[in-house]
Every structure is written in C-alpha cells, then in structure tokens.
Image (cartoon, rainbow, N blue to C red; front, side, top):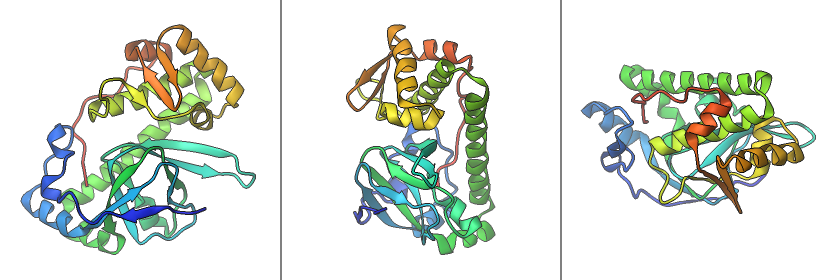
Length: 250
C-alpha cells in the first residue's frame, strides 16, 4: 500500500490557524500556543485516495487535519474493509501508535487533505509540561471511544435504514459545526464507503439509501451525498443528535 503525500512547508502558523475562529474549539493558553507552535514541524498535502497511515506501521509523526476529509479503517486478510470513523478538520491522526507502538488501523483521504505534522517523540514533553494539552488528548481519545460506541450500537441494534440515517446525520452534523458546507450540504462518500461502515453489502446499501432518497432526506451525487433534511434523518435514526460543546484542537 503506497502513501502518496508531499510536503507543503508551513502555510498556516499556529497563531493564525484558520480553524480557531470557528468558535467550536477551546482557546489555547499563551504557553500552550508557544509549545504547539514548536511541536508542529510543517504541513503535508495528501491527494484524494492516498493512504496517510498504514495499519502495522511505526509512524514518526502525528497529524491534525487542517483541511479535507478522510476515514479510519481496518482490513481483513481477504481484503474486506471495515470503516471505523470519518475524519474532518480538527481531528487528530496517529495518537494510537504512541501508546501501542504501531498503528492498529489505516487512514485514507476521502478528498485532498492538508495535515499539520507533529513529531511523535515530543509527545511526552506535552504530557510532562502542559497538563491542559494532555487533558485535551485524553478528551479526544474519550470522544473517539464514544463515537465507536454509537457505531457499535448501530451495527448491533439499529435496522439498516436507521443505520444509514444515523451515519449520514452524524457526519453532517460534524461537518456543519465546522462550516464545511458551502452552497450545498455535500458529504464526499460513495455507497461503497457507506456499505463498509455499516457492514452491509453494496446491493443492500443501495436499496437502503434509495429509501432515504425516496423520502427526500438525501440526494445521491456522482461522488457523494447531499443532505436535504437533517432533522428527518435524525427522526429515522431515532437519535437526538450531537450536543453542542467546545472541543480541543491540538
């Protein structure tokens, strides 16, 4: 599996991060901003479809998504894929490898991405010197576990229609909070991505998504899904939606 990336230097100093003005991330203390500015070594451009991290690898870096979409996944020996979660700006990539020694999943770009690059070796300095940032990493890990819990609930107890509605509503609400939508509420996923997330065949997924289309909750595009009625998706999924809260950004 090939990792196709290229360095882009440093276009966005941490003090001028384009994500912080969005108002969904907690503010840094001055000393935290100084540390993170030095912790960050550069930025990485990733093309759509490229692999950022490979399961079983030992990466020297951590990444934060600055722009673009990606997803985490695992593969069975016969090539079947399970998508674990979707990545959007502000999400941290690679923390798991700091604790287990090697990555337990892979990451692929759904769209062109720009990543902030951090040296993994400096992570323990963060824990020693900046308890606030260490708490942020714990918060991010706990939130990831919470999202996986909800995904497990979907796979285990929700019907196929409820699963699909929940997945699209969940991604849509995260994207909306970060103002990722321009003129239309478009999510860059294919029906194969949905199938690999929900544990369904592509045929079953197609029939299930058609029901959401017929209800005018979504519109399926060439390379993605347009959300037409987020509240309707929440109702089908029997889900209250994401709670509004400030979140960390490292």
